[in-house]
Image (tube, rainbow, N blue to C red; front, side, top):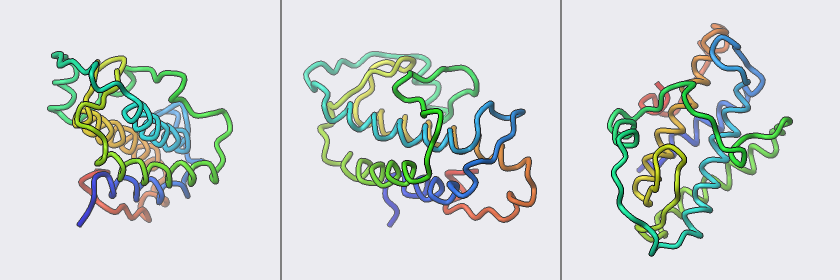
Amino acid sequence: MMEFMDGQLYDIAYLIQFRDSRDTKVSKVPVVWHLDHILKVINRTYYILEKSDRTLHQKRFSWIRTHSFALRRISRGKEQSLASFLPPDIIKTEDLLLQLELARKNICDLKTLDEHSNFIHPVFGQLNKKQSKRFLEIHTKHHLKIVKDILKSDRKKYRSLDFSVEVYFF
């Protein structure tokens, strides 16, 4: 049985081989930037959830969150990442692999967190654990779609791609 985000993490591992691919018509940054960013968001979100004060969680309505979560998508080019979630100028493959292993562990450990664990997203507002999981899925899918579009420009590479779960990537 597939666990939460297994397919997406498999896709990230597979895509590391295309790390230097880029298409400036699709994105200003190469594939490796998107992969590193995805992993940083997963790992830092887990860390924030783990350290959060559960008593401070307050339910608040957010139209943009409701809209994005219902459509299961984030619009391209609309938001900027916080500095702490941005990849460094030089991204080593070894660092990606370490982050990937940590992401696998953190995704697994999400189950153990309290339901009222929370973090404040700059656009979506305060997210509890369930909403955070949804955000991680949508955010990861968003960046994997960008990677797919970058790789589409090189038809030879694209034809040879073998993604684990088409529903996540396509």
